[in-house]
Amino acid sequence: FLLTSSQTTSSINYFINTAGIPKCCMSTKANIPPRILAKVQRYEVQLSNGACDVAALVLHVKNFKRPICANLKVKAMLQRIQQRKRRSHHK
Image 1 (cartoon, rainbow, N blue to C red):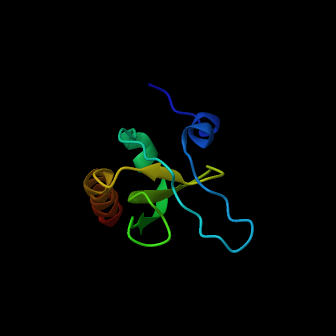
Image 2 (image 1 turned 90 degrees about the horizontal axis):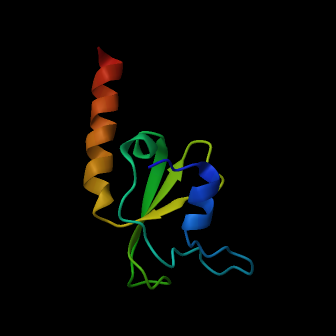
Image 3 (image 1 turned 30 degrees about the vertical axis):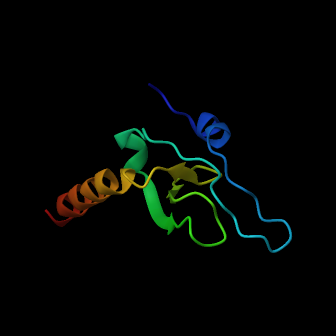
């Protein structure tokens, strides 16, 4: 399974802010490959009880034009990958 940045851009459904309207994920993706998660520079949690209808993990990935809207369950795997990266940098 190969996920290129152009495929990712088309596979996410991210509402673009045009008139002060919040950016929201309209849907989420459950299966994000570990090699993509390893490139996440930062992430935000989108809650469904505010301006947005869908709870999501908004992943900002290096060299991707737009964020990836992931299922909140992806957060545990993302944190494990980030911990491994930090440990390997300290050795």
